[in-house]
Length: 569
Image (cartoon, rainbow, N blue to C red; front, side, top):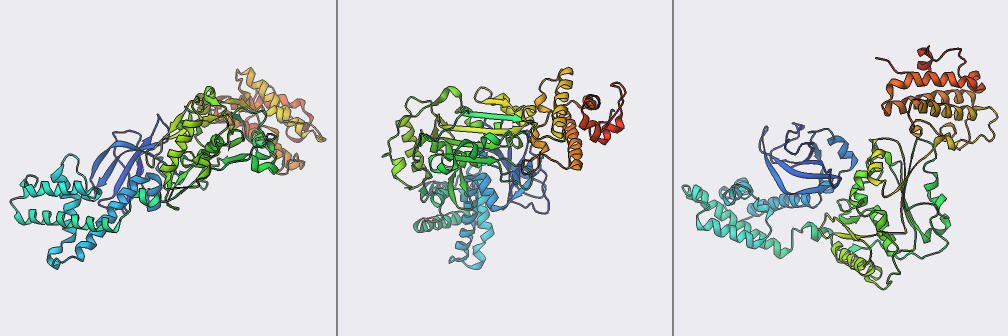
């Protein structure tokens, strides 16, 4: 049995595209869709393949909230495209639900071995037939509307009740015309009960709860407070939005906020959001925000984001900072949706001195993660009585984790303009300080002997004036910063050929910004007006182009040469 994952935009649509060479009978296809209310993804039904061209649909009683790494997500983002998951991928995405399916498969294989080694004659063993009785025939006899495989039932009392019902004859009435058939079913149930009882004596197979929650080691520790170590000039949640290479991230870097020699007195986590194929596991993931099961290490895991927030709560005077760099590459608004109710500015509070003798500080290992969560929730109840508490979902065992918004926790982010950052404006404007990085203000004319820097700044200011004349007032989306005209070492480009190529590149950037903001029809007119206005700059005329044109007579060849041309269809 293999596990597949398929995305459907419509809950009622079940049509999926499979690799027909790989799909097989009894394979299971989990159908998921975007969770528009809570964010993330949810599985709402699964298909069980019954033949080459048909399947059985099972609608889940309760949708399953799942995590999908980008390496899988980008393969399934096309509606109806089914992707085959490896065992580790299935366990990562589906968590406990896959573990149950896996345990079901293991039980079938163990029971097959049990029959093979039984006292029955070779002609009477009929392993495939007996497995089919428990997998399909008996479930249909017991409850034809919602058949449940016998291999998914671990409650011994429930199994005995099923055997009792079968023995009474009522459920077997439709097969009683074949006493041999009915007898084999009863015999198989009896053998399976004996098999389960033997397994329970040996204490196997273990469930996910037993195998993953053996010992849980805490990640929390007491951090020594130093009053000299603090975060200055930032609100607790602050995002800077602007054009690429305008220095948006600079002030959020660890070395700009803290003296890194004082590392033992603060906590700082930078999450670079690279995105794209080849960078699948970079950026902020669902696993950073939640309690998940790690199939590789076979342990329950608290995400890094969550760990920093929890550390801030138990160390209420020590500054804790998370910096999301280039978060425009992900839909951060959707990813953080479960935290949106928590991070309201009116809910932020100072937490008083904490009791360092509390179990959360004195115990380093717990019997399992649930015991740790119970200790944590008790800590919150004792120390945060007058503070708004918001629970987040624990998808492993169901025990919610109580959280508060402490005043020593900072969430900082830097991003370019795109559709993802527009979502931040919509969802976080009342929770964060969101500022635009003015690219023109990043320019400094010190040591600009050639006039190249002044030319680039003037190109920017001319662009701003032209945009405003066209009633486009959010010029920050279109202008560029000084960081675009410097080398890797931070020094201004001084090679004349590279300077000319850079200006051509800047015109291309302006065109792309206009395109992205649906101003395609204005590209040629704005580009040509820029060339006209830049004739007042000596460096531009000497190194780029001297023209003797008029505003109404556009030279499209020049625009094409400098990459700020758009076909007028």
